[in-house]
Amino acid sequence: MSLDGKRVLVVGGGSGIGLAVAQGAAKAGASVTVASTNLDKLKPAAADVGGEAAVLDVTDEAAVEAFFAAARPFDHIVTTAGDWGRPRGGALADLDLQAAADVFKVRFWGALAVAKHGGPRLPTGGSLTLTDGMIAHRPSKGSAVSTAMAGAIEHLTRALAVELAPARVNCVCPGLIRTGIWDSIPDERRQATFERMTSRQLVPRVGEPDEAAAAYLFLMTSGYTTGQVIQVEGGSALGG
Ligand SMILES: NC(=O)c1ccc[n+]([C@@H]2O[C@H](COP(=O)([O-])OP(=O)(O)OC[C@H]3O[C@@H](n4cnc5c(N)ncnc54)[C@H](OP(=O)(O)O)[C@@H]3O)[C@@H](O)[C@H]2O)c1
Image (cartoon, rainbow, N blue to C red; front, side):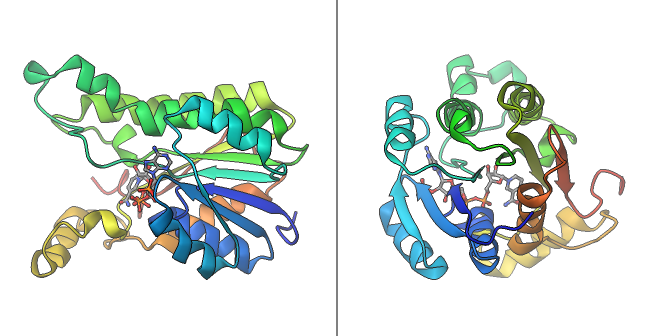
């Protein structure tokens, strides 16, 4: 199954892993739309992939519904949307349950909104690919909410694969990937931080966005694969 001539939507495609997915899909001949909340971020990404930019906030269900109702149908939808502004960790005893619920807003409820309004429009053989993260499988102290949220995305994937069949639904679970989210660590400390975080992995280095993107491209084009989660994590789960 080829992406040549296919219409691909990447929600979160203005940066990071999503941008690498958009670039890979465009290179494979797809017509790509990148979508997220910030048009300034999307414009250069759309120019880079020779595609279109669409402003879309996945936390606004009415906007998601209106977007898919107005858009020409997509063959494949990927969402890598994730927000970083709110606190996502902390001691259980100090947990604010409303803040904990908010952690699900973009990554979980946003993905479900995209599935609800975009999924039924996918053609047979088309696909929806969600994103979680290895925190689902490697909880640490203070990660209860993030771990539960990421794990919920994997279970959502399996349920949506049943709901939306014969369209296919899968998920990519990245480990540490070198994107702009790590830029808040000063340059001089970032490499040392990556080395500390990855030293026990079987592949002891940070992953690159195009290495994560390869999994999304596989899931889009593998017409016999649905309900699956691919971990792209350098062997962090096995590395102790
Ligand atoms: N990088 C890693 O090490 C890593 C590890 C594990 C999991 N992940 C997961 O992989 C995904 C992508 O991460 P990344 O590193 O590529 O981060 P990123 O560059 O920040 O990409 C996330 C994208 O989501 C968009 N977004 C945020 N809120 C949105 C909303 N309400 N509606 C629509 N789009 C929204 C952002 O664009 P706007 O600001 O324009 O909205 C941004 O382009 C995230 O879900 C993250 O949790 C990443």
